[in-house]
Amino acid sequence: MMTKDDLLKLVGDAMTKGFAVFAPVRQEGGLLLARTEDPGSIDLDHVLTVNTLKDVMLPRCETLVRFDLEKPGVTRVEEDAGRVLVFGSRPCDAAGLDILDSILIDQVRDERYAGRRARTVIMSLACSIFDEACFCASMGYGPHDATGSDVLVLPSGDRYILRAITEKGQGFLDELGVPAEAEAEPDKPPELERTVDISRIKEWLDSNFDSPKWKTVSDNCVSCGTCFYLCPTCHCFDIIDEAGISRGERNRIWDCCSFSGFTKMAAHQPRVGRPARYRQRVMHKFKYTVDNVDKTACVGDGRCIRHCPYGVDICEILNALVGEG
Amino acid sequence: MDEDLVPQTVRVEAIRQETPDVRSLRLVFEDPEFGREFSFQPGQFCLISVYGVGEAVFCISSPPAWKDFIEVSVKEAGKVTAAIHDLDVGDRVGFRGPYGNSFPYETMQGRTIVFVGGGIGLAPLRPLIWQTLSDRAKFKDIHIIYGARTVKDIVYKEELAEWQKRDDVKLVKTVDPGGEDETWDGEVGLVPSVLEEVNPPADSLLVTCGPPVMIKFTYVSANKLGFKPSDVITTLEMKMKCGVGLCGRCNIGSRYVCTDGPVFNFEEILSLPDEF
Image 1 (cartoon, rainbow over the protein chains, first blue to last red):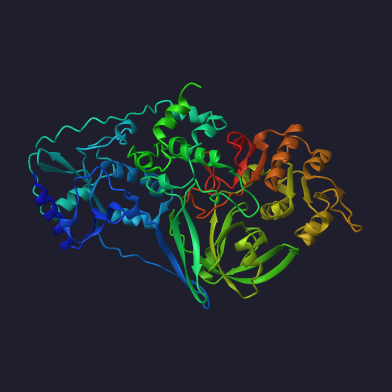
Image 2: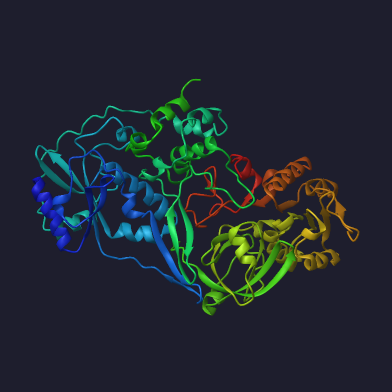
């Protein structure tokens, strides 16, 4: 059992051992999962950071190659291959990585993502608090779920239990000299207020690509992409060149299926209109990913509900799709 | 498969102006070892990049048997294709590939093959046509139906003439009504109607590519002629960025055109939503 101070000291020790640490810290823009070199800056009394673990594993913008327009060829941009510790992210975010692993490692191996995953230890903090947007339990996870974590930190009164989930997690605890001890009883996970029944949604989506409901459920969406940027599992990207007169770079940047240019080609646009784009988003999460990797691409973290400027609520939409009328 | 999205360098060895807005580029790998090891199958595609402008997807339009180089045929339509049209012989561009599945060459053998191409859509069929002709004895009849908007828009003119001369190929070429000129010796009419006039036997295998609307109506005509959906094969194009199933852009329903395609038969296509 550890106190909060013990935990933060452990994080400090990891820094000393060379881990780059990402943890919840208050910054302009709110509570963010961000790089920190000061364990004292870490905030553990929160429901969720605004951003997700995907910010660490799939950067918003990463340079693939640099080129000199005067010379042939390109230079592959290598990134720092040092070890990373993510501390204090939530179980829903770790579950998001488990889904991304299926898509970005198990099918085709995205070398950069796979490399980052291999050298990163995910030390999740199980939830004792939640808010009205949280619905992880309905998605098959839960406030104390271990999916995707290497180490799970479970609250037990005013102390914490450290549970190694993977070999990598055990290796990390061993390296940091955390003694194995008889495990105490963690607190009971909280019962969430919000629930959604997704048992019928896949079947409905299988046969309702052309439903008129897509128009009504997408009425309030303004295609701003906020839900995409804050989703732990959305991973679509664009590849764009940026160049000056003689030099430039090729960047991989996040891109969103809600944007009208997403599928637009010079002479053809196969997906026209906001309802069709919104349908793609729901289909991708609740049908296509299930078809392809047998997982639903939603972890119930609720960020898309909390942060949508127009109050679009995915749970209400799922209910409306399968409901009468 | 490991993918790092880093391109190889290829050099433009020759440029052929096919039509006012289509050019074919002959490309040679800068790294000779990569060039020697490089292999692909008809139907596969690649990404060509002009550094500083971007990458775009093209089918490899030369057959695998043409060693030491590959060709792509590029219609000027947007930003990257315009930059490709500005290239000169000797310029270097990026190349990634080959990606995607290929035409089911083994299962095509022993049958009558009907190639139906429209405009630049002949490009992905061209390597398959050449491969089929090099194995001519393995096939029954070979029909080629090719249409373009106007006489000026016909690609691979010399090769079409060469195929037309062969007595083991039945070639019909057509232009859309109004696209003919005084020199035109082919048909006048839309590709799907010409297909119906040619009326190939319904147990043939039909391989088609062209603009999306032509592909859809070619299927309607093939269906009318009694073709089974699984005997009508096409190759699709969608906007792609990665080419390898990561970037989430080219899906039709659950299927990704880059990794599950680009070659599909209509039995597969009819099971997908109409979003291509």
